[in-house]
Image 1 (cartoon, rainbow, N blue to C red):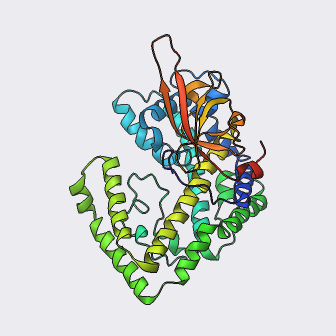
Image 2: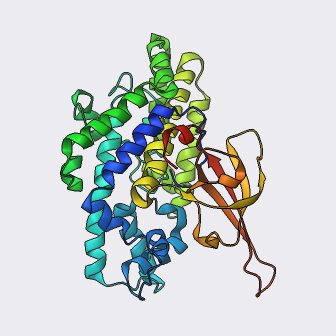
Image 3: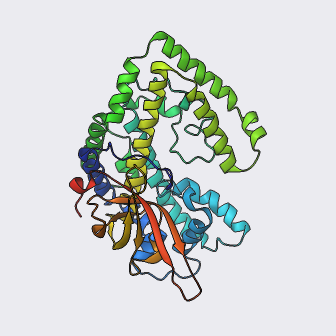
Length: 376
């Protein structure tokens, strides 16, 4: 999920963090991943490279400035072409078409490999492919092919027998990774850790507890939600603006789930726990590890712990890259007395006057368990 959608990492096990780290290390050996990540703005800045006006990295930086959270590192193959079309209208897409096409070919492969992997990890769920949750009704934010912050669950994905496969399909071929067996072994390690997670186990428990009346309740909710989200209904609410259309899908889905009761409600709630786990660990964190490598070590001050959640707030010290450390980044904060890595969720820069470089305050999510699972 894009930065800013906070998910609780408190239940992620050391074993799952270890497995995700190992899988990311295997992916980083891919020449396709290297081709894509080498042109990402954060990679170029960290390498202190100068990018001539018109280069792919510069064009991508302009898109990030204009479209922000839409550009998840594992969605770039499909999102960048859409953003480029919009950017060209405002004259901020100055890039050589051949260079961009070559880079997009790599980005599309990385996205395809991730979607194939994510689909297989989902197929480890109890009851798959018969997932009765209303959140997978046609037209929700988890199934739409319009803009959504989620990694969608297409109907086709649940009809091709992924549950019978012992590893994701064609990922080594797509990423041009020579060590196919090593990749498959790493993916199976992630799957084992997922199956042992509290989220997968709670979904299995609630699924096994469903009665006939619970299943009927879920079926009715799914059909009703599908009818609320037909294209005409979404168009009536908002004909053009993508974010408002996405908000409508989210609102209707939440309303449908809130109307459930008993084990049906527990089942739908457990499913969203699975969604949050997969998107945090196998999309947000995994994407950062694959595209940018291990967390950065940075110096901070004025540390606070707001609220009761796994979050930390701090001031970046002036010599730590200023605005270049931004939402989505993974960091080690040795000055904070927090041993685990954190993921930046929000950044605020305050400037007093033109001569002031500003203060950079951030809120980050503590990824509990990573200190014991990842090398630092």
